[in-house]
Amino acid sequence: MSVKRNNILAFLFFFAGTYACKKEMGNSSFEGFQQPSNFPAPEYHFETNALTQAGFELGRKLFYETQLSHNNTISCGSCHIQTSAFVHPGHSVSHGIYDRLGKRNSPPIMNLAWSTSFMWDGGIFDLDLQPLAPIANHVEMDDTISNLLVKLGKTTDYPTLFQKAFGTPEITGTRFLKALVQFMVMCVSSHSKYDSVMRNEGASFTSTEQAGYVLFQQKCNSCHKEPLFTDHTFRNNGLPPSGLNDEGRYLVTLNSTDRYKFKVPSLHNIFYTEPYMHDGRYFDLEGVLEYYNSGAQNTTNLDTLLKQNGRLGIPLTSVDKTNLIAFLKTLSDRSFLLDKRFSEH
Amino acid sequence: MQRIFISFIAFSFFLISCKKDSSTTYNSSVKADLSVEFDNIAGSQDLQLNTGKYITESGDTIKSITKLKYFVSNFSFTNMDGTVYTVPQDSSYFLVIEGDSSTYEPNFKVPEGEYKSVSFILGVDSVRNTLDVSKRTGVLDVTSPATADMYWTWNSGYIFYKLEGTSPQVPSMGGMGGNNFYYHIGLFGGKTTSTINNIKKVTLDLTARGTPKVKSGKDTNIHLMVDVLKMFSGTNSISIAAHSMVMTDDYSANIAANFVGMFRHDHTEN
Image (cartoon, rainbow over all chains, first blue to last red; front, side):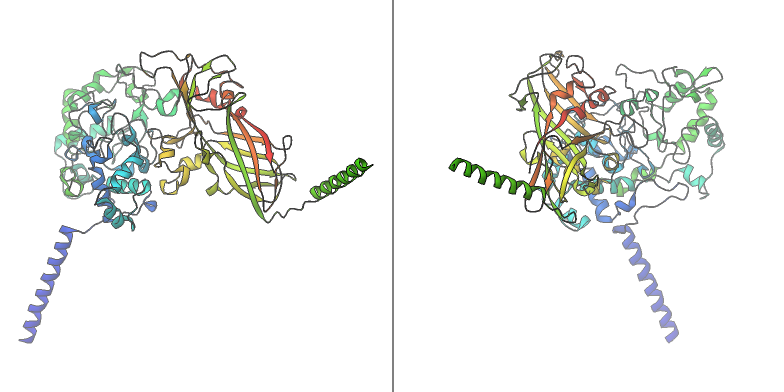
């Protein structure tokens, strides 16, 4: 009898224990930065920005904070929409404050912990410095960081949130930047079908996807290098310059060999990150692939990989394109797009 | 007679004071006050923001100067015996802002002694340009109001030198910018990709115009003149008409080449 009672008690304790664990997981457990096993080591310097739950949550609130713009209308989230892997879908270029237009396509905020530079031209070399650019940009938020820090200091909630994250209520520029980065580096997308296949988690490619993957490795992988689908370099992919004549990385380095080069973008969630290219000129993947098949121009500094065998671009049959698109769709990570941790609270 | 006597006494005092002066002993293990004053001028005139009118060497008219800001950093002082005292990094960065007199005179604590030269850089070195934001304090804090307009947010790096103003030589751009000129000179050489390096080291002899004698209990001041008109001449002649806006631009190197010539030692207050 006593043995039986002990068993029952043990069972109850166990049940209570699992219940408590589950409750904690659902509400407040902060797991910090999780390294996907199929990704390389991150580039971000976590040693100067230790992630905490309070820091991450403050960063998230700041990310969706319209007071970051001069007239309190534009937040980071205005042009970086989570359900589209944090791009601005349907917009070749985004409209910022007073509907002023930028000149380049809003890039995704995803797996930035692995990025070696930021923006299409790589002008920013440290993620901590990245938020300064859209805040100051005349067509984006058009504010000064010192002004917005004053604004945040006058609110009732931010001093408390800075205290929770950093120990004291002071709202300094460094803390502001570090908190935003804590949010951004947590935005890891690594649960696509592709990632599951690579990690041998049970998923497998269909025959079309597999054919697309083989083709991808032959024709795309030298620049869009797995598993992040970028080699972090800058290349001219032969797009005819638009009327803006955007010279890309040249504007940053002033090296003539960088003229018309732009960063090789990641392809994670590519199905959701339309429009494509640095100026968002293509609205679907069919258009992009046909561009590589027949649209590349022999402009200054065209990448040598796009002029092989006396031909510009990358030859792709219609079957090739179908297979490639099937493969590219396996890079979609719906759990990332819908992850409540990254949504406005 | 009386006159001769007075002369004798005066001469004696002179001898005594000379002797006293030449026998000043310095204790190099003691640090004392030394300041370097950056006195911005335009040719033979004091620089007056907004109101002063100036003519460059090549004859261009500057109707007004509306902004002048520049970083000076990495100071070192060379003693008469050649010993170099390098100011510790954490207290070696200054932003001179015309119109804000609190920024004109960087202060240092240096070992007692007589100094024959001062060196500094116009700009911010590549190490500080790539430092973690948490370590960018004081004038290097890119989020502070004074520094924010001395930093390129889109092309990570400090603007070393900024001169803005108006000139009738600036071609009118259909209402865009009026007759304004803008010289925003930066570029530290790049972090991962090599770029232009516009950091300029300035070394000035201090013996010809008054050797600073640094001693505890007094404040020695090295008074430098910084002639903005020299930015338009020297190594390269800069035409305002042809180059009214120079920022991240190959041409910035031509302007930076004139930087060293802007600085001269005027006198020392011992």
